[in-house]
Amino acid sequence: MDKLIIEGGAKLKGEVTVSGAKNAVLPILAATLLTDEPCLIKNVPNLRDTNSMLKLLRSLGKSAEFDKGKVMVSKGRETNYIAEYKLVSTMRASFCVLGPLLGKLRRAKVSLPGGCVIGARPVDLHLKGVKALGADINIDAGYVEAKAKRLHGAYLYLGGVYGSSVLATDNVMMAAVLADGKTVIESAACEPEVVDLAEFLIKMGAKIKGQGTPIIEIEGVKHLRGAIHSIIPDRIEAGTLILASLITGGDILIKNVQIRHLGALIDKLDEAGAHLGHSDGALRVKGNRRLKAVNITTLPYPGFPTDMQAQMMSLMSVTRGISVITEKIYPDRFMHVSELNRMGAHIQREGPHAIVEGTKSLSGAPVMASDLRASACLVLAGLAARGKTSISRIYHLERGYENIEKKLINLGAKVWREKE
Image 1 (tube, rainbow, N blue to C red):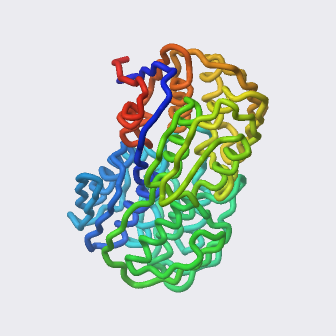
Image 2 (image 1 turned 90 degrees about the vertical axis):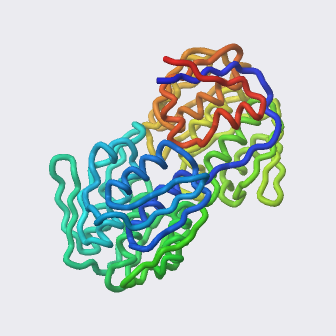
């Protein structure tokens, strides 16, 4: 197992291109289970999670070939309806094969999911949704078994304790496209990744309206065809690179950015005094040592994304003033706090709030990544810190950031790997 070593202090400069969105490509790959015809997916990031999903598709009977950012999925052997624990346990997003398997085969047996340990993330909304479509659900020995002689349209509310659920919306939408009649999902997730999935399904012949709003309407069809689709840019990678420039006092041109997907982040950075210039799908980010602290509350899209909370905490830890960061999506998503404090940050946890008192500088230290976005947070802190930072468990980072080391090195960062 490798660890990542960062020698901080370098100001990042140059150009970098954002990869395809992890949170869009995974459900879109799962959606290929809805057809026997070939599907070509472009702008696919080469990630640990992408390759895990491809393994899962192959285990379910698909042929899936990945080459130079393109995935061709076609019919292989007879489709299998069982998604095994050894594959699903490594990645929560793999649970989204439940919807398409149920929609296509009227039967699915899917292991309860794994992934990042960032607090309770139950699958109750997924099950509520497919039950409303007519599925019988049984949970036994760590597996969800769903069966239905036929699926029918339904009106259902998918709001949860902490708001809408992206994966639950994905799962219900994929099950409903081949159901009889009309389905209406109220309190649907509005994230761009949900919209990207809907656009892919529409290319396959699905009838969907309202994607990107809290109410999605789906009229079931009898058959879906193959399609060609290009994945949207990863807004979380773009946000992480923006903060990398700011925290190092750098000057970066970030290409392949959907600026409209970054509204809440850009608004907070404007409030903090950051200099961002944008045109033609690119962002120019110049570091500003005179940033001021801002308060942040994570919310479902278009609110401030929970997937940027940890990275923003790194920036606030070296920004003058006191900021309060409130996590309303996953209240336990604060395992990076203790690691930042090891590097000299002044952060106090109070329930779902983190109180961050900015300090002049951080110092390099050995730290451990607990999840994907915590990994990115520690990379940012290491880039800004004095001395060397050693980050262990970087396999989390590989799950969601394509070639991040190479991208940072090309921008002038001093980053390398060593064996644990």
